[in-house]
Image (cartoon, rainbow, N blue to C red; front, side, top):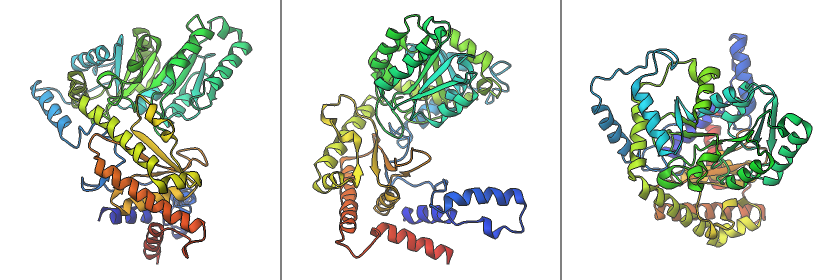
Length: 465
């Protein structure tokens, strides 16, 4: 059974190693000592064995099911067949030999689809985010960012040329206003439009699953900085292919293409291939080329990589993914309806055992996120993930430092290939876990740990015996 393979692989990596390395080089021993700190809490990040399609998927980034169904593979093969004896490697960076016609044609096609002046293809969305912040924030500028921004944004901040890096509270227009007012009053150059403010947000936050109130943010920035020196950088990684017209993302859904300076899309999630895309105007593109070592000091994307990206976009452009996009909306709504109406799950939420923020007001929400976190008490995220794994479902637990302290959760990711029967099984399994935990916490059970956790820790003990 997959759960046994998964748990054994994970548990073996949680065994402390430094104490057994007395005769090894100090360099390696010290590295293991640092990793042992995480191992003590069963918190070492590990790679997982890949599962087959018999395991119910609430984890992968194959949102539109293009990978599972083989549709992206067939599109990719067709794209390659149209180009005969292509040269596989770019054989240089974009500022050298690697700026070949096919990548330029594909960038133009993608830019047209997204109603953007131009586009730039990067090796990944992560690299795109880092490269943007490295290039466009000038000395004296400020970067204002949502406190729950992705790790790629945080790394990009460190590489940027500005030291003015200020977070605001997650999705809070009041907090954003306070930060912008502080910049405007403390430095006349911002008020006069002589220095820029870059505001970093995400369309759908990967760990919270909520949407950015982008229109309200844009209106605020335009009102406070009429010179246009406050501009937005939006990471659309989780909205690409999932929301908006033909999966164009949040910006296109809201009709704000002309109001957003930089959009970062990815092909490694819903489009089931690889690579990142920076949507911008020609001025920003020139700055990326000239000022981002991340983007230009490495070999350009290969023909095959660009072909896989193009194959995904051909599916979006043709409307072939619309049904999958609609199916995601239906399946998420089905889950929210089922879990909110389940009496045991409702009791668990009332007792503070779990919290599903996206349940609130879901019936009146026009667009649903495919990412739904179930927040728990510390350590309980592992117990729930164990429980789901033993029920043949893959949904990973997330804890600090991936999310803030106190923000432990199991993150559910929904796909076009998920069925209502799978959702019903998921909700029933969550309810079973909740009932067991409530009995433990209320003294109605002789156990101190739920059954799945007892199973896992017994397995762990057998591995270290």
